[in-house]
Amino acid sequence: MYVFGLISKKGGVGKTTLAANLGAILADFGARVLLIDADPQASLSKYYPLRNEATGGMIEMIHDGNLNESMVSTIVFPNMSIVLWNDKTREIQNTLPKMIDAPARIKMAINNDYVDNNFDIVIIDTQGAEGTIQDSAAFACDMMLSPISPDILSSREFEDGTQALLSRLDSGRPLGLIHGQIKALIYKMDQTRDAKAIAAEVNQAYFKFNGKVEMLKTVIRSAVAYKEAATERIPAHCREITTQNKSDSAYIAMHHLAWELFPNFHGAYVNCFGQLSESDISSIVDSDTQTESSKTEND
Image (cartoon, rainbow, N blue to C red):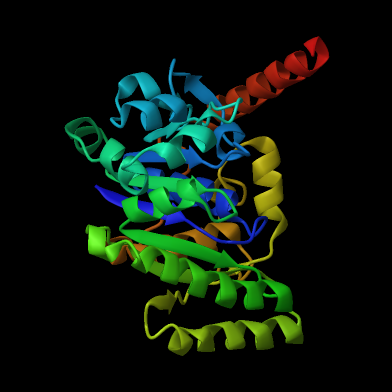
């Protein structure tokens, strides 16, 4: 089992979108993927339609300190499951900081036979602010992915925020808490001259972190496919299925990211949704859209 965390001090940089789409393409490669929504905004919990919603979720996982099947919901797409953020009363934010094992709580919860036997990859989406939940998620990860949008504000916040994050997490070493490596990637890269210059500047930040932060070679360029896929609640690589070498293709970009993180996949392309047919896909999306519309009308 390998654990990724999507972590950034700044909100709105694409953590949830990246978590959902990375999980989806790895699932199409055949990995059994568990998404964990550790963000109070609960965006990941709403990203994909569910096949079955569990009775429990993050509240129970944090409270019990032991993740089991009663807390894991299944997503309609093959090989994907999720622990939903189900805390509507801020119970986790209030109780987790008071727990003596708070920094290790998420790691303890997912390190058990149930998770090991049922999942190959765990992806944790975190809130865009420092705090106990983010720290607990970080200590559970083998690797932390940090997306950066290539604008001046984001690049500077990345440097400052990452320095602060490393300093905070390094304080856990005397307690035996070792955080995973941080790998950053440029997200929402456009074709402007300024964006390219800023991306180069961010790459240079590697030396400022003494090698503790590695910049991935993969660049996720700005593309309408990500927004359209999120609206349709499908993975971005399923929105435009083509192996044509387009620099802004979500299909190509997500493959390159999967290849860089898991070199054994390199050169292989996946079919979308496993064995689901196009009619099955349309049925799922249409049915879910009708359900959401009905809920809105009833509300």
